[in-house]
Image 1 (cartoon, rainbow, N blue to C red):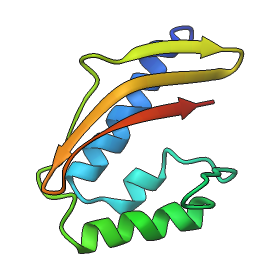
Image 2 (image 1 turned 135 degrees about the vertical axis):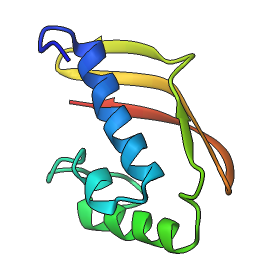
Image 3 (image 1 turned 120 degrees about the vertical axis):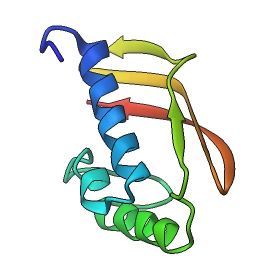
Length: 101
C-alpha cells in the first residue's frame, strides 16, 4: 500500500491478520501487534498470543472470515480507528474495532 494512504495501510494490516488467521498462522497474526500492545482483557502481546493459541486449539479459526465491507476509517492524530470489522467463524460472529497506530 502507498505510504501516503493511511486507509490502505490499515486495510493491509487487517488483511494480513485475517489471512494469517485463516491459515491458523499464529506468527503471522502476531506480526501485526506492536511489542507495546496493551488491552484491558488480554494484557500485553504475550496475553493476546495465549488467547490466539487457545482459539486455534479450540478450532475457532477454522473457516474464519473477515469483512471490512461496512468499515469506516477515522484518523485522529497518529491513530486510525477502523469499525466495524465483521468476523464470522465456527464460534459465530463478532464485530471488532481496530485501533492502529
